[in-house]
Image 1 (cartoon, rainbow, N blue to C red):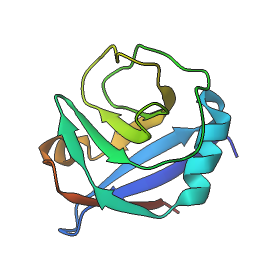
Image 2: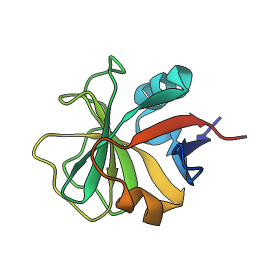
Image 3: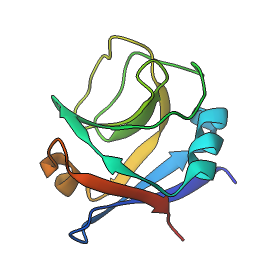
Image 4: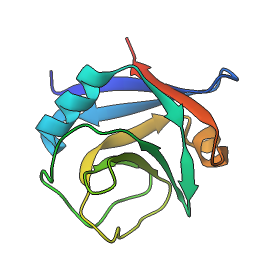
Amino acid sequence: MESYLISISTPRGEVAIAEIIRYKSPLTAERLYNSLPLQGRVIKIGNSLRLYVDLKVGVEKATTKVRAGELAYSPSEKALIFFFEDYTPPRPVNILGVIKDGISFLKELRTGDSIRIGRQN
């Protein structure tokens, strides 16, 4: 399987879809997919959204340049990060994929809001 679709949803019924592109960070992608479903409260920092989760992976094909709409995992922060603008993170991140649909509602989430990440069929 070269890519996986995941859903990011809130208790209010809003849903975003992201595509995890396996070749970008294969080990991280597998760990994330096998850990689903995940649930937690997000933290909004600038134009990004974080969900803290320890996937127990290190730096893998890491970069310090991300584009708006990308989803990455930060091994140093142990967090999934949804980026809403082009950004240069202070530490390398493992790019996982892109947000395909629903980015507008993700941008509106605030620190403390709950999300659930699951497999999309």
